[in-house]
Image (cartoon, rainbow, N blue to C red; front, top):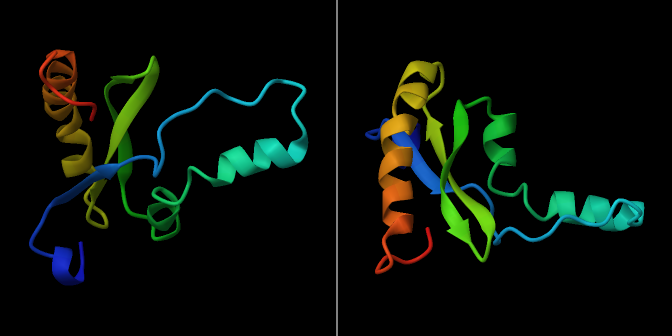
Length: 104
């Protein structure tokens, strides 16, 4: 990370800025399909264009649809980004199965 994030190895944040929703139907207008695609990339696009290693980690379900968190690493530090998710995913999934827990 750089700037204020430099002391940290990883950044954890929501993969999507909004809750998951049903996909448009197969015969949906092109404009609707594009609109649905663009409304969900605002969290991922900055890391795509800056070439930082990032991955989505499943952490449960909300209203029957999947929820995930995104783990972002430092430039050229793919090993750290790849090594952490199995443990983190187990913790997040365990939390989502706990009835007292809230959605991710």
